[in-house]
Amino acid sequence: MEKIKQFFKFEERGANLRAEILGGIVTFLAMSYILIVNPLIVSGAPGGIPYGGVFFATCVGSFAATLVMALLANLPVALAPGMGVNAFFVGIIIGQYGYTWQEALALSFIGGVIFLIISLTPIRRKLIDAIPDSLKAAIGVGIGFFIAFVGLKLSGIFVWDGMQLSLGDLTNPAVLLGLFSIIVIFVVHSLKHGISKFSFIISIVVTALVGLMLGLMGVDGMPAFGKFDYAPLADVKDVAFVGIIEGFKTVFNQPFYNTAFLIFALLFVDIFDTAGTLVAVGKSAGLEDEEGNIPNLDKALMADAVGTLISSSLGTPEITSYVESTTGVQAGAKTGLSSVVVAGLFLISIVLFPIFHLFSYSSVTVGALVLVGVLMSQQLKEIDWSNMTDAITSFIVIAAMLFTSSIADGIAFGFITYTLIKLVRGEIKEVNPIIWASSILFIVYFALMANLVG
Image (tube, rainbow, N blue to C red; front, side, top):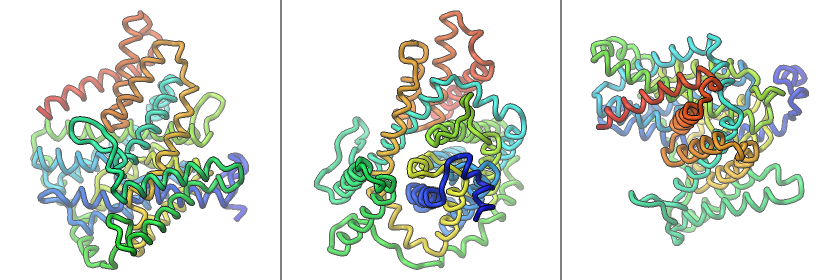
């Protein structure tokens, strides 16, 4: 045990075993929905990847990538197939451009190779170091608001009818269960006793048990265990490694412009989604050094890239770092040991999926996501609101993440706004070359996306 503590630098980071295990469990439960959602999305389109193959790839890919993050970067960050990327994978690459799912996996793999090459160069750290401190804080706040908003929307507490955001149906038992989850976690976290440290796990478990009991009493829409049916896993033999090999045989027969753009889009989202998440989680965990740098950030980027190579080979879109890792951090996780716990739970999920299915209901985890939003919003104080450049840029970052439902887009609009303001103020020399170069690439990206959608 002492060797484990030394390896993960417990003393240096002020960590303890109980908090690491608890943090890992909380992180896993907060992101376990991906085990349901990713297979449904990726297998749902015509010609999509077989469900069982995607589920297996999601579990094993997340296990492998998170374990690499734990052992290589020693950070409390979990990885899994990216939400949004899977929709892009199905809706755009397969649905709009007509690529096969095998070819789409090949594109994802190529993007992962490029990401890995970048992570092996000095660009990896310079990219993060180039971001101004206020902008880093705004990214953390934006992610906090975004993750809380996602939880509130998925649980039905707020609904979007295509025209406006409004309060959900408060007569719906599932919505009321979500509100119960929020109340429980706020109350427990506000207590002045040591039990407040367990607010995340208490909220998730208590809400799940209450929902389960209500379901047994006949209340509709309540959390429930799934059925033990392993037959779909037989699809693995037609997906893992087989799919990507078939994809590479034909993907280069597709138009070069389309292929290049789609690879760029996948790479773009992965890099900046990951960068934003790592900064936010690192700040939340208090891992910054005196210069504001996150330890092993270069290794973390490498772990993310390796994760994409693994997931693409197994049969699911690219892996990315998950903002839900902040739930584990707030529960006390400070080292990669918590990520080892998450990795293990992903692997166990293959066998115990029906049990973990209980925690995939958004009404069960919404409280944890909302409290993360509250805690991460405390970084607002780190933004220099008296400086209009910082104030405007920070506002744009936070608002864009919410309105576009994309961390990468929020960062993109922030970079562009920051560069534009510095330009009109005659202060362009103060802008790091990486920032203004990225701003130009972001503008090109949006222009291409507008043309794509049009």
